[in-house]
Image (cartoon, rainbow, N blue to C red; front, side, top):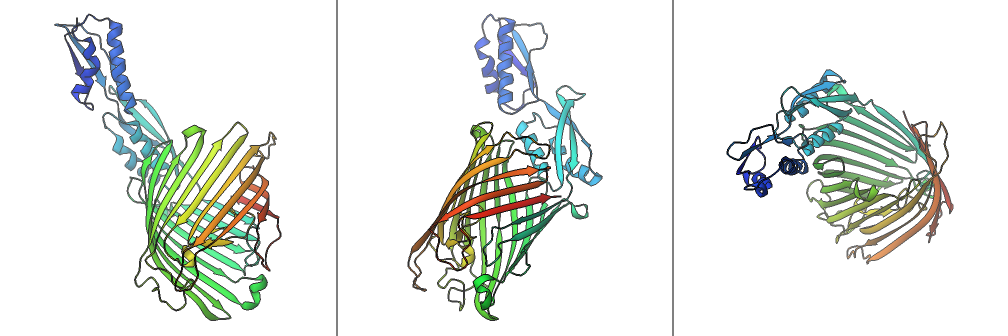
Length: 491
């Protein structure tokens, strides 16, 4: 008969919780099978709490005075080893992973977070192996390091309007660990193929701060447009610049769920001239806070939810509401707006899948043109030119159904995929008492189908047919329906 149970080695759970597992055996005649069942229940309690290295067992013993001893081994990592990578990268990995050493009991979520944070470091990919350590309950971790090479991408498409394209080429480069630091530099150059109608450049520097997952970044974008087609004789030129310092931090980081915060400042300047004379000038500073949730386990699909709040910051870096030539008269420099995005990719069967997306913007204020929401282009409104409609408020959505064809070829990295889509978008401007423009809305709708594939693991090709409805009368309107193509090469 058991009169008392002594739990040896348990430090995480309160004594009352641990003793409760064996309470039903006290004062009763029990078998070894009953006692092992109790040990398994306590072991399961550790497992459910994420302590994957811990173990509960009943050691060989002679029960004296009815006292049973139960041993808990709270597992831990005794040593971290690294394999691969440069000395600098190895030191980065050790600096982060050594914080797990001698933590008892070790939680799986803590290990997963460290690994996922490491895999977000510029130019690093890792996996880990655990092996038995020399001490009871200890394990040794081996971190295999793979340094990701710099990457370069060239793409071309015909999605632009006649005024700015329609052919656009983009060259981008991603350089990891510049000057042997834990950083990443990206550069993107995009232009109409004639190098005249449209040019843009974006450069971004990102570097982790510490080892918690916090990343600081600074980006600069400069764009210039000289619209052609029917606008060519007007000699219109638009230029804009955006500087954005930001911070991002992963609140949750597991294999199936992530929740991250991102915040920063945005300094924007834009100007438009006609025949060399000033037409509009915008200057704005705002701050924003966004939250992104990603789940990869629910119902055999991927879910992404993003929401952000943006606030205008009046002052020396922002135009006054009574400025002489803003893009929108009567705008509110102290504006507030909320943006949201929902994306769901759903596997239906082995060859069928679907993707649904909805995004929108809400505000009570009149906004400068650069802060409005627009539809038309690659995602919502494929049958229309980019930014065919725009406004203070808006809601857009699309649905794409996909089917992977059972065609095999040594050239095809992924199956040929047929897809069909529908999309729609609506925008609405708020009442503007200064300009005299009253509340109004515009909508677009398009549908179509296409085919896409990846060749030789580095070339993506897409061809689609898109038909727009309710096209506005426009001298420069492209043919409807339109045939769109996209080609991307990674090297």
